[in-house]
Length: 247
Image (cartoon, rainbow, N blue to C red; front, side, top):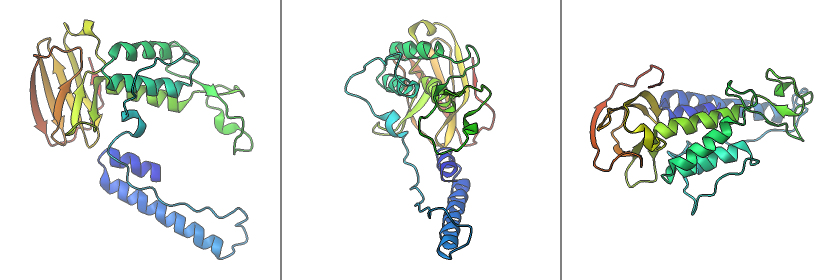
């Protein structure tokens, strides 16, 4: 419930976030009250936790810029490779991002199915291990690994547009992962999610046309776009519910 509330906050769904956080607090209080009353079936140790504070505006460690970029080793954990690629993206290094991306694509557990695996934990808190069976009954790995797939999808979305919270004012960086050889052709991205809203952008080879759904934000283009590029920005307060589209 707390994780759901945090996700809702990032999506701007504050009413849902408040409701789920209240449910978590009620569940905690009921659990602790039941154990204090000495219920016969309360044989486990009493669990105590404190609801997490509302999430900060940034994406925690993914927004931190390192002092220097070091390419990830192919043997490094995949989540670490994706984190390194995120940091390279925020340093304006699309070439390094694409190198990591191709490396990760080549490490798929089932090529072409957008699936990865990871070693199964040596020490686990589950008794029988069935929770790790997700379609491939391989006792040595967790497959598919949802975390890797989610992090990689977030990276590819950020390559199209991401919110830079470290800037002097909230800034959307468009096309930070776009390579130079894509610039001569037209590109369109619609309904790409941002915290509290979404963004549409269209590039015709000369002008960048942007539509912001939600809060007003400053726009900055990725390093592949010419410095003299004209940017046309409009704002629409209505939040779009259509799925993201890229062409």
